[in-house]
Image 1 (cartoon, helix red, strand yellow):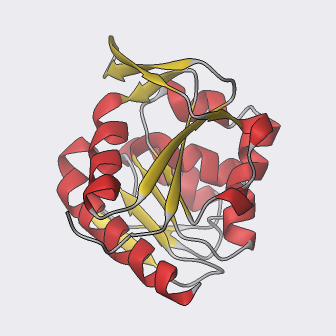
Image 2: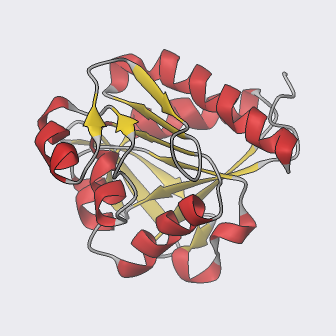
Amino acid sequence: MASELQGLTVAFLVAPEGVEQVELTEPWTAVERAGGTPKLISTKAGEVQGFDHFDRADTFHVNAGIDAVGSGDFDALVLPGGVGNPDFLRTQPKAVEFIRRFFEEGKPVAAICHAMWTLIEADVVRGRQLTSWPSLRTDLENAGATWLDEAVVVCTAGTNTLVTSRKPEDLPAFDKALVAEFAVAGKRR
C-alpha cells in the first residue's frame, strides 16, 4: 500500500440515497490505497443507498451524521455525484455549510459529475475553473465559474485546491488527481 495520504482523514459527503455508487467506491478505494482514512458522512446516521444510474445498488454504513462532525475533523473532502445525491444535499443547510467550511479553511475538495450543484449552493465556484456533467455547464457559468470539457480539472485559483471531473468514465484521472492534490495539502499541515 502506498503512503501518500498516510495520516489524512477524508470526508465523503453523500445524501441518504441517490449517490452514484462507483463515484463513491472508486475514490474511496483510491484514498485507502494511498494510506488515507475515508469516512462516510451523511445528513443522518445509519446507512446510505447507492445507485447505478437510476437502479438501486449497495448500501453503505455511515460513519457519522453531519450533526456529529465538522470540517475540522477532516483534511479533505470528496463529493460524489449522481443526480439525486447533490440535488438533495444542496437543500440541506448543514451540508452546504460543511462544504463551504472546507473552502474557507483552505482544505482540498474533489467533486465529480452532478456534485457541482452543491458547490454552486455553497457559493464557492465564482472565479474557479472546473468541469462537471455537461448539463451543469450553464448552472456553473451562471454562478461565475469557467467550465472546461476535460476529464479532470485541478483549480488552485482560490482559497483551496478544487479537483473536478465530468463522469464515471473519468474516475481513473479523478482518483489520480485527488490523491496527488490531497497529498500536497497533507504535507502543508
